[in-house]
Length: 483
Image (cartoon, rainbow, N blue to C red):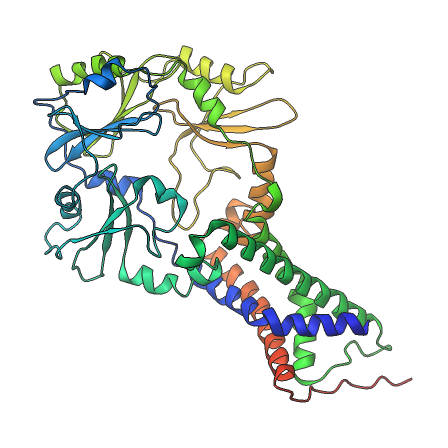
């Protein structure tokens, strides 16, 4: 027992302050999320596509055999451009000149930023090519590097990031977000840019510090319970002073502290735990045979001959080998068109096709139009998922759930057994959002603040006791048991 006490004590000295930081930064994250550019907010800044003079495509793309998986048309610097996905070497094409744009120029990027600075004076563009910074260090931005960063000179200190490969705005931050994230997400995730860009080192550091935290909390629970059970009748703690308060708080909130550190560890999916299978194969099967450059060019002519003046974005959305496009209007509406430029909402035959592909070897399950959130598809931090959504659940032992866009028929999310486990073991335990009622605010805020206060008190008293031991101060003596 003595060696376990010593181990718990010195681990507390080593990581006690880190545990306190995790608690306090977690409270900040309840109210300020990590910066992200919402897709709907980005669409609101786009201008309608000008179809006059469109759409010329390079001969190499027309004659090429490279499949096109992702294609999207928007306006850039007053000209319609075609953005292509990673399956082809050409990424951005000027549809007036029929030539590739590589890279997007600072002047072109500045026109994108100007759309976010309406009514304000745009600061002089920072033309330096920024590979990464604190808010763009994640691998999600790798395809967009280098980035152009613009200060919008507004009252909230907005900074906008524009991709040099697609010409699209990819990130936005405010001064408030940047300040609070240094007290929230950055320390909570150990998300310091120079560390995070070294992905392997960062992940190992998070995993092993979490493991140490789990061991610290686990040994604390064991010691606390054993000390309580060892006391004579009428007495349940041998401690006084801060030792007593740490013992008391640990008995009440120790399991919760262990739960939060463990669920934080599971957020990293260490060693493949709870790592769900990618939906890539299902998406490929739903799309069918790949689209060629010639097919894409032919379909775009329909929009040139019968243009819609309110479309700000046109995205390729093939289904079962047939070409379809999702048009987003300036009012935020999403419409589906076929290759002839006619409206083509999902029909019963296509719904049956979706069910057949996603139901696996079991009899097809009819898609259900879900208008409310469910345990796996729900809002978090105010970021509401698109509703309604089609849900298809497999009848086999995997119990996999698929969520499909009811406009395009494209697969949005997949939850197999591993992904479902991740939702409960990480999301549920870490955020305590098991039910709709528990997720509702302000009930969730009150509940989480009470629990966090208790766990923080455990960590603060433990860190303080560790600090006293580190500087050589005498600990509060234990109460001697009477025989």
